[in-house]
Image (cartoon, rainbow, N blue to C red; front, side, top):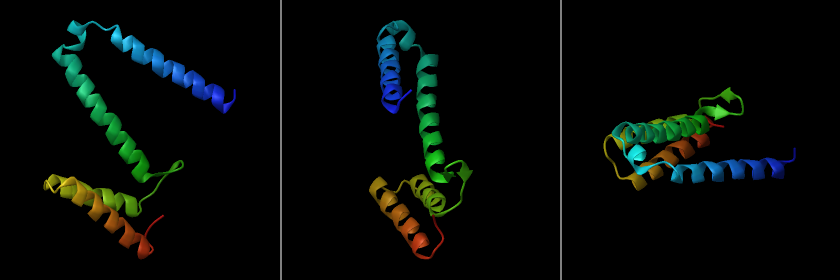
Length: 104
């Protein structure tokens, strides 16, 4: 199977899943338990992507400037610092750590 075949099959599966979502009755979709699960699932998927991109390098787990920068960003977000400031400070921390040679 070529790369393009895989992409086309995956695209068809995603489109089919999206179309199936339109067939779910509104009474089911508006149930409080379903809404709660979908809200939590979204957060869990986003968190897993952040962790994978932050601590992963291929099949290894690494601790480098990215992990420290995300930690700094988490602390700043906890103190309700504006998001643009969080991004700039976290990028600055990562850049300084990389400049000092503690990074990938």
